[in-house]
Image (tube, rainbow, N blue to C red; front, side):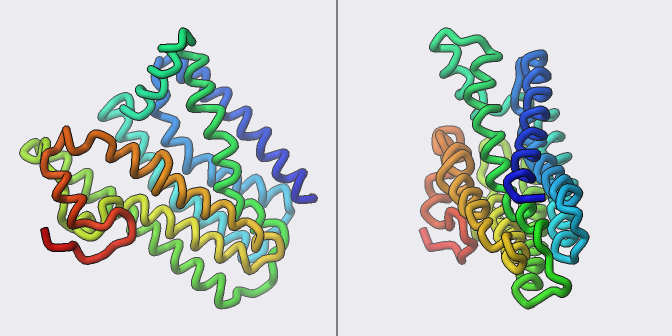
Length: 263
């Protein structure tokens, strides 16, 4: 199947999925569960691409299995977080902007949340889609390095999330800042791990024919995590809610792990 047809089919799959999720969000009056769909949808795109391309090369299987392992860990984690903590402040602020213009909850959710996320998901997942179209027989050094980087990112992200969950589960830590474990070296180990995973998947895909041109995916997710809806929105107002956070920012790297600076 030509690449444009594969991407068009995947886009239709996402449109259908997001419409169903939008209906659920309107009924719940909450869109925050959409975060749990993000990794799940990535895995779905990998497998539909493999089916449509008719490929079963080693590169394609590695891409599909790695992104699925990531989704099986991150999707349920985000769903549990939503069930435990309720609506996400970031999404509430987005919806408040729309409703301040006189829009309904459904229209605000569609315009600010669901409509933007669908094309972003399609673009970020380019490596696991384009890497399925032309797969060589054997693995080269680039794919091996990429697979190792993806596994590293998956584990790094999982450890960071586990440390944060453990910290938040202790009532004594309310209002405090986690600055131990991986969080001692980066303020966002989960985001750094996520970026490593997608750059690793890109390296695997880059060893195939069309996969080399899927670099927009890891570039886009890195931008979103560091400058878009990731770190900036998480840290917005954090100094007001946690007085220790200003000092934490001064001594701790914002993204790439690095030994902390002295206050």
